[in-house]
Amino acid sequence: MTQFSQSRLDSIDIAFYHTRLSYNRRKITNQIMLIFTGILTSLALLPLVWIISYVVYKGGQYLSLDFFTQMPKPLGMEGGGVLHAIEGTIILTVLGGVIAIPPALLAAIYAAYHSNTILGIAVRFGTDVLSGVPSIIVGLFVYALVVKNQGHYSALAGGIALAIIIFPTIVRTTEEMIKLTPRTLREGSLALGAPEWKTTLSVTLVAAANGIVTGILLGLARASGETAPLLFTALGNENYEIGKIISSGVANRQGLLAILNRIFEQPVDSLPLTLWKYAQQPYPERISQSWAAALVLMILILVLNIATRIWLQRRMSRLQGR
Amino acid sequence: MDMFLDTFLLDFQNRNSHHNFPSLIDYSVTETAEEDKTKKVSFLVPASQIDSFTPSPQDTKYKASILNFSLFYGKFQALRNISMDIMANKITAIIGPSGCGKSTLLRSLNRMNDLVPNIRIQGQILLEGENIYAPGVDIVGVRRRVGMVFQRPNPFPKSIYDNIAYGPRLYGMRRRALLDEIVERSLQQAALWDEVKDKLHHSGMALSGGQQQRLCIARALAVQPEMILMDEPASALDPVATLKIEELMQSLKSEYTIVIVTHNMQQAARVSDYTAFMMIDNPQNRTGVLVEYGPTAQVFTNPQNKQTEDYVTGRFG
Figure 1 (cartoon, one colour):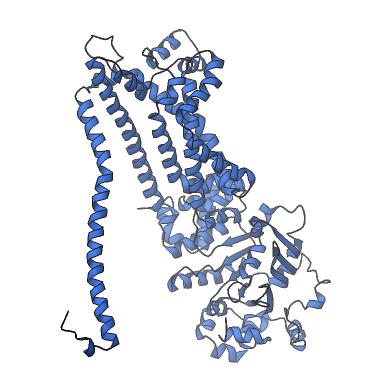
Figure 2: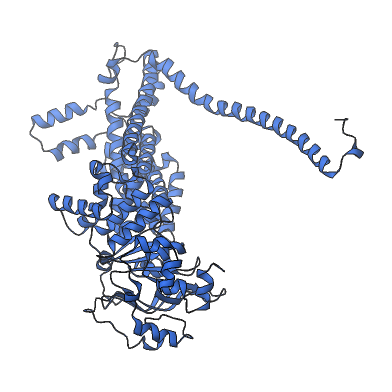
């Protein structure tokens, strides 16, 4: 540093001198910040890795094929599975999706194309508020609305509660995805004389499909992990076995609607509900089944996720022609 | 005129040998305009004649006529009193600096501006003698007759085949054999058939930019429009792809009337038969007006208006 005496430097040299100083400082600052952010990123990933590996460790010990395919056995007996809860989770999630997706897509299309109208603003505001409502309140609401009127807990009530919970997620992601599709694509269709509904259906939604499917998937994954609203609505039912309902329905020559009605009118268990109930019991066997149920829930969501990703990848590469 | 052909762009003559400027020009009308140089607008329709001027539908000379057309976005006036006739089976170029309303005028020709909220128009646009802005006019019918190609290629996220068949299917065509025929013919017209005939069921988005734009042209041709509007169709393409589009336009004009908006004056000079020059009339209100309209050769070599001359010689804009 001392080799530059101030008198020998003209102003440009001074500038360069300071630049070099600050360059070194910036380089070091950059290194420090990079290390810092790297550490924090790993820290953020830590809970995820921890949770997954702990559940795999604890649940994996009890997991076997029987656990997926057998109904629960009475306490004190060896074995038994959570088939009823797997079936219940699928029933509830599908039901929630079937109820929520069509109106959510329509609301999203409306909000995307009429975003400045009163109704458009109301949809956006309303879904934001709805997504902030605690899920147990949704359960309470459906209890008052459906369970009390029906006179019993049911899968239908659980499905409705889950539908209300995933509705805002689907609306907002779909709306964003529709807004992201290039306007020129839409104009290309309209310029051919296509009416707006046709354009939306066969061009905009097709172009936005990947994002929309991802949004729906996020919603369904969340729904399949919900516990609180189901306490008030689906309740839980260790004797729920779709195979039995269907076979007895077929044996009694019941119609499809009657069988569906029997599937939806009963209380039903779900994986999070089962794991919550088992975890409270003072029997070591139930506790380990609870861990295994947690692992099954995670596997279900993972499989759903991976399957959709593969499907989306295939679709993308078909569209891009690669 | 000969001097023009000799001096201005040699390839102009070679590539467009079927161009025959002197015979294209309606001398009687041209002379009227030359006598009346003070008038700003249009040698074809002097402002004084606008009210009485109505081309008959039988007269194939004019494909479309824009009559005293003004357009407002809310309070902002985007176009004022534009009058020009678009000649059938010719290429008409609209040039002018950015923001002068070229695209707005173009999009008025198939009512694409209807999508914009708070829009208001005055005047008429006649397509084969019928006012497309008359109450009760079927917009779908207008857009079917007047196709459009956009600045950026916008193929649908579908296969090449489905892109082309989209329009015909819209109008109820379901028979596979007929659709096959339309797809092949449209792609051939758009000079794309040889490149894609083996991959009709691949995605249209897998094509190169120039191919995508020709696919969009083929898509517009598939519904057999009478007029095709092109909004800077080559501005997102490289020179080779641009050349292909320009050649394509020349081959299409025997069957279609083409209106092209372009920023590229050389392109306008190369491809068009008629050129319209638009400008904002003053920087405060930014309203677009038609300054000069005439045969391309005249507009570029012997402009009647000082502003046109300044623009085409590159002195501003």
